[in-house]
Length: 419
Image (tube, rainbow, N blue to C red; front, side):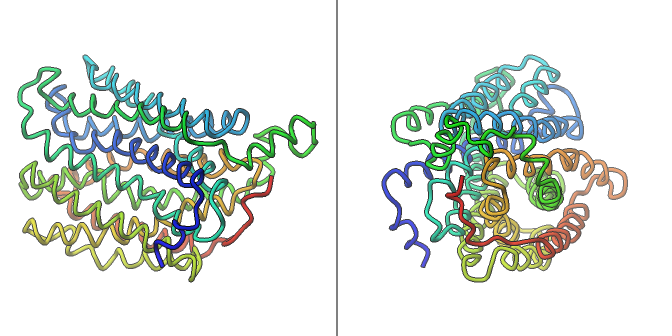
């Protein structure tokens, strides 16, 4: 059932999908390196944990700028070329974060990284779904979106294996080394340059633009505004999705260490188990959305996250926390596994590189202060304890995701080859 769609792909389709998956995985890896190093970065710059979460805020709130910028460029110059520029950009800003001499410079680097990160998802998803066949689209959606979880898994693994051996505050003996490792994704550009073809849908549209077909040369922003109700709906839905995802991931390592006193190496391995749960859930729910529909798969996964709260946020042993992390992320990222295909199927063809990506990243912008709000709520009402805040986040946002997805439209099986 799960492997059959892969066997139907041509060589060029496999390479295009692999490039998009790896691009999103490595982008995610660069983001989650900071999540795992929050307390170390705070100590290095002599600021509080609540203050250093501003770096997450600036990354998240600048992502819509990247979605708009790189999405518009991809509509004009092609998905493949802009994806390469995008990957180089986020690698450069990850490296600049490693060498930031002050917290202010670090914040600027993370904001610029956010612009680059914001462009990758929309451009990569457009290239992937405009290249892949319609058959098994939900399965590929699950794999593609879980590049984000795979990046978190890699970040947790690198943190668990490398960080315990780093000591002191020098550039080569601290958290900065992990950010240097995060600059390595730039080598993916060579693979894309040599092996990945441009989207056939964009190629066909370029021919229409060359022929000065009126429908093909309408301004990108005009295309977005003509579909404003759909765009606003997708933005609201993605806001709920972002609150659920970041609400269960960004502060979880800090929760393990500060609430429960879990050792750094152990918290890294708990994160790895949770990431495997997310990866499995994304593929599973993406695949079953082919049979039951996109909305039903999302609603089912989001609501099932709620019963996982006791294991995930209130266990006291490493084993049970790992089980809870696996179960929670299986549901949360299971719902997310349907997102790439669902958004692309609901998006107009002429703006497919910008429409879903911008809605996705505007959801990030609206929720970009969530980490700061969560730590603030924990400090104000619970003496710094994060478990009640994390629990409330899952309860509220699980219901919100289920409601927004369930009440919206569905375009399962839509023709993505149209121009």
